[in-house]
Length: 131
Image 1 (cartoon, rainbow, N blue to C red):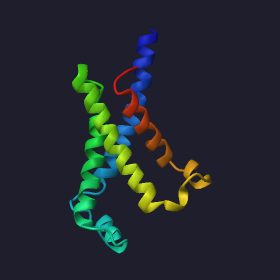
Image 2: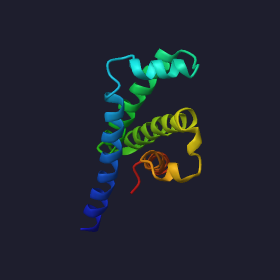
Image 3: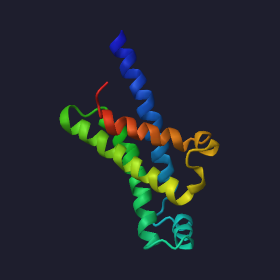
Image 4: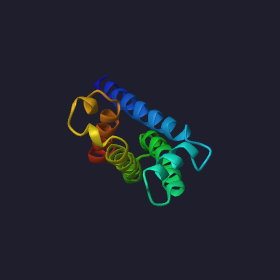
């Protein structure tokens, strides 16, 4: 019974992170995401359309990978989970640095859902498929 509860608890975390991040990326379709591209351009970013496209693809791939990684056995499943978590981690660092630089270590950061997405990416980056 304890193994089943352990599996279910990990799947709840995976599904909420994976589906949530997938939906963030899916909402940016069709590519390149015009609103994000325009925003990146207004921030003076290099290659705003390419950057916006990579963010959307990274969010979709990271979300799907976190979920699928649970069902792939062995080292490949573990690698898929960690690589997907790395995508999410990098995207979240970019979100904090570019979109929310005023959030670092203050009330706004800890009252946002982004801190949980970031924390879960670190969790899966470190643990992979180990339960």
